[in-house]
Length: 418
Ligand code: GLV
Ligand code: MN
Ligand code: MN
Image 1 (cartoon, rainbow, N blue to C red):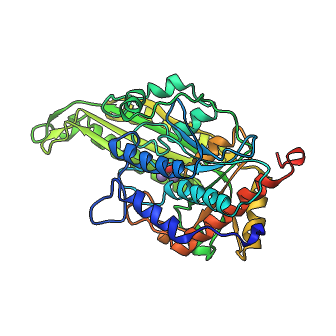
Image 2 (tube, rainbow, N blue to C red):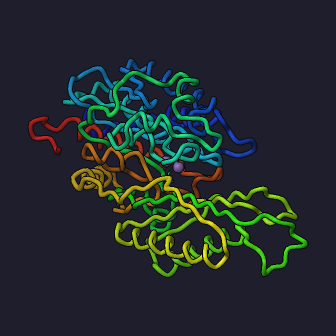
Image 3 (spheres, protein in one colour):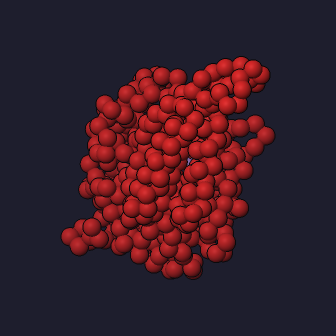
């Protein structure tokens, strides 16, 4: 069978997406809550590992819980795909899950079609990509690629002081395979765009050129807790007010800097969080992103300067802690070109575009030629249960992934792209 006639099985892909989305389903929505290393994450992992086993793949679990399934032949370092199956607490059913299940589907299609390859294909799901429970995001793939020692990652705590290591043990996914892992031959991840660009441009396929830099900071503001009725406004040292000032400041900063700078205050916790008490403390997160490292540093410096001013103006103490910091990543131009060529050969008009969201592929890019394929997100909505992608687009993306991986795995190893 010629490679270009081969196509993935739409029904099987959609059934697996549905089955995985039932685990941690958010009632009354199509979305999911499967935070990393929870019981629901374990159930999702068990389901996907069962499918990997059914295909006769060689399965490894490494010291940070990344699960890799590889064809047992031919020999050699695999051409890999994959993504994550953890979600944010208000997640959709496609973010991450699509990349894992499409990868599984590609491998099943190649096995069933008896396609001869020079290298095996592998599919992985990486631990805690979202970072919503255990920051930083992309934790598992960061360790996989050697960007953080596994011991350091195992010691990361959630908001309740529970560690990654304890939770991995508890759910039975602390494996023995080494991490960092041996680099694959190449890595390509299929993902929903999670933004509005493909829909606006009326394109089905994005050939992702890179990922913007990410800077997450937790800011803790300590002031004077006091009675809301009796404390004169002039005598207040109010952390809630300062938290609001920070949210307004970073929003205006991003507008002033212009695209592609974005800024988000996604979490604010007040203590004691009572209607008639000036809070003692506010803790908030600031997420800054830019495709340009120098501009991202400029935004970080502006925030740091403003925090010093606010501490002085309001008589509060402000402490900061970095939760994540990743420089912008540029994907391998040969892999990006290959995605464009494969998409065109299948009748698409692909758009070269950067990613606004973080992805496991940006970590794999440290160790092997890497790239990504995007499919549209309805109304650009993601990290929200209403996240949706048209099934035709899911299938189109999976077929571009299929032929991209086959091309990478059939190159003459002596003259391979890498
Ligand atoms: C991870 O998914 C992120 O972009 O926040
Ligand atoms: Mn994702
Ligand atoms: Mn996500």
